[in-house]
Image (tube, rainbow, N blue to C red; front, side):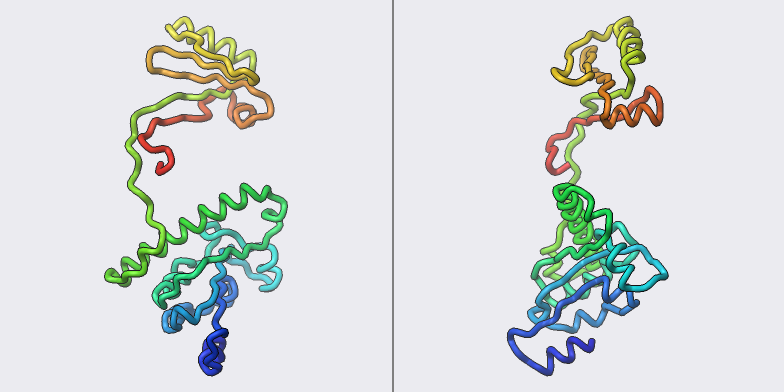
Amino acid sequence: QQVWNIVRQADHPSLGVLLDSFHTLSLKGDPSAIAEIPGDKIFFVQMADAPILAMDVLEWSRHFRCFPGQGEFDLPGFLAPIIKSGYTGPLSLEIFNDGFRAAPPRANAADGLRSLLYLEEKTRQRLAEEVPSMGNADILFATPPASEYNGIEFLEFAVDDNLGAKLSHWLERLGFVKAGQHRSKNVSLLRQGDINLILNSEPYSFAHSFFEAHGPSLCATAVRVKNSASA
């Protein structure tokens, strides 16, 4: 509110407000008054979630910020009044924590995009409850209808070489036929009609880690859908 009062009194076209969810919510501020700021005077919006911690705010900010939906802040409650104001600009992720600094940038980028879509969807739902007739909520992401489900494509089992050979032998006695072998990995395909079973004994893989934790077990299920992108 203090920042907006300064911007309003200055009344200069090149002066606007930058909003940051962490700075507001970590100090238990009420974001509802943001709706009273004209949207064209909000120049930029930074989003960050965080777990609720009782510690120094600076340390909290530098080491425990996370993507929307991964913490405990009410980020839809922060973004909703911003959209009500008429703001249509970008949403920035300002995330500081040690894990993100060490993680691969491509994985971080994909995770960040998912978190923004999640936040937009939750905010859109919040606005639909509060202001059903609000028009500019359409700029927010809405989940498309679920893609048509057409059955199971394959079941994948985590095994080691010894158990994989035994399971393959048992399945062949039940009428399954070995239909394929991965060209470079210890992964084989057995088929009976429309039933596809994959035996994965590849070392240093997800299946190997799953086997180490659970023994021989189902580690993945693939489903057939009409549109994989929307699914």
